Image 1 (tube, one colour):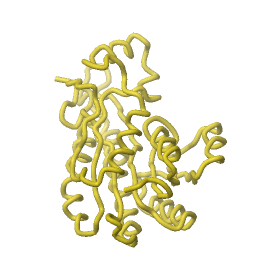
Image 2: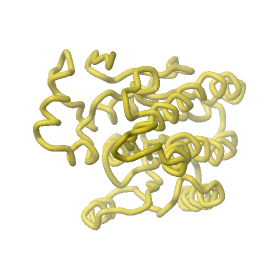
Image 3: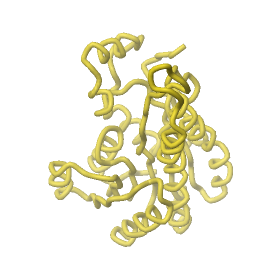
Length: 251
């Protein structure tokens, strides 16, 4: 799919991977329906010069998602794809002598944002994508999984479960939507320099960067955005989860 003059929805667009993806798509000539719970004023000022419609949306709420997507489509007239970047990564053990048992509420909230939020986005967008003319495809959906889906660490039970669910969605959705000319893929990032990681102590960030074989650094969100762009443009990438991790393996 040629990105120029196409319209995409991006969740988690206010920061991190979602913000970089929004910027990358705009720079490539696309228009973006940017969804998040809040936006930095400087970001909004920058987007005024671009084809971006920012909308406040809680990805956990299906009806809210449907309304937001419909509002964006009404503004631009069409929709050609969606990229699910909204996510949280809490660290909590199943049981700890210090903090007690894992909160069932925290587990459910992580799944609601990371997994159900991805489902809600795709479920809201597919009817609009099916309205497009097959030329040579109708649309593309991209989710954000994680290397934790297969290599989750201690304290990542909720995060790993939610991202494992995201990865598991991809092939059945790609098979179902193939007849409609809609591709479905996911990216499984490794350790990226997002605002969440930036909040860690510098020593922890250095340790994380040192664990990456090559290049020995944290991933840059713009590298994630470039992979999103490539997946959109490469029509033969379908039904797969692409790792983007500098060959790091978490053991």
